[in-house]
Image (cartoon, rainbow, N blue to C red; front, side):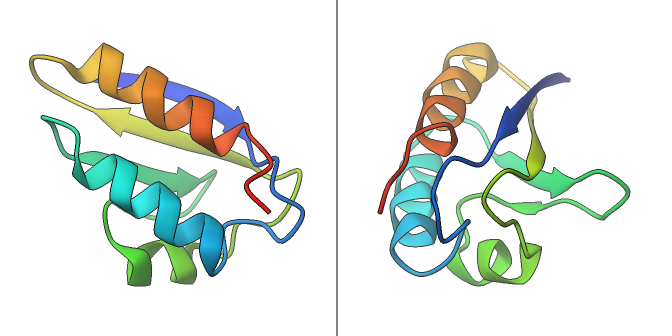
Length: 87
């Protein structure tokens, strides 16, 4: 399983518009991507509802994970988005 640790750049965290953009990007990947905060259970990054329940705020570190063919490239794309201010 591949993982990426990324700091949330959006000033509103992963909420509303950033969650929608992130879910759309994650769902378009060839592998299932999960996202979690340290010590918490992972949620599917392709689920807006899952992302909203994550409670990730600006400056929080999140851990993205995926497994399978194309996982590295998929994680790179989603990690780039999390590290971007989407507001």
